[in-house]
Amino acid sequence: MQVILQEKIKNLGAIGEIVDVKPGFARNYLFRSGKALPANKDNVARVMERKSELEKIEKQKLEEAKKRVALIEKLTSVDLAVPTNEEGKLFGSIGAAEIVDILHSNNLDVSKQEVSILEMPVRVIGQYTIVVQAHADASAKIQLNLTSSTVSELADAKKTDQDQKSESAAQADSDEVAEQQDADGDAPLSSDDA
Image (cartoon, rainbow, N blue to C red; front, side):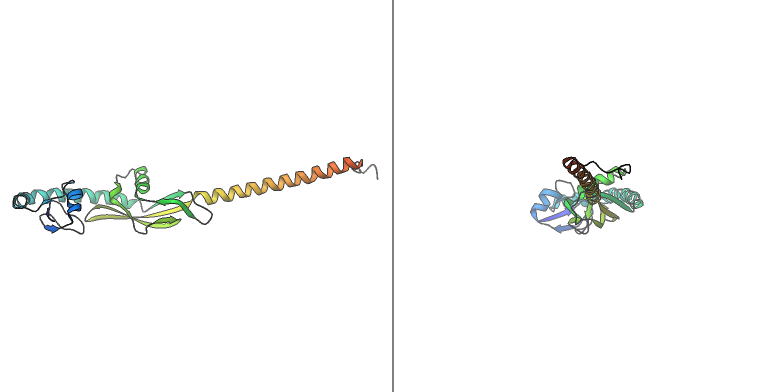
């Protein structure tokens, strides 16, 4: 299906270009979002009339996107503690929605559609590269550092359990010795008895 673009779309074309796309992509995305119109005589004439106006709007969007990208790039890396097993594998995975939540907590306005993680899927702790595509011509890269919240908690829990077991074992041993001495009728020898 041929469509005429009303805004620049990455990997597709620029304003006023007539491109071939699949009918579902045109109907479900391009037409509904106002990014393109069916390529008939009337629509082609209408877009060509408005081309300078559309280019002005596109230029404003690009300037806004560059400002957003500059703010995002100030945040060079993002740290996130996630629950994992002992080997460092995540329970589930990290996706664009979690990244957007982190960026929103840092007062950055980003939508889920703009975020992509280069090394997908994210299933183990480590470092990953996030790309925020604010515009077809403006993107920012951020480093995502995943750390395990569970491994440190499990290590602390194991240490606490071992300490408690050793204390209870020591207590049980001293209780056994005292019970055995009571059963034998022997009192522990004191220095006065010797």
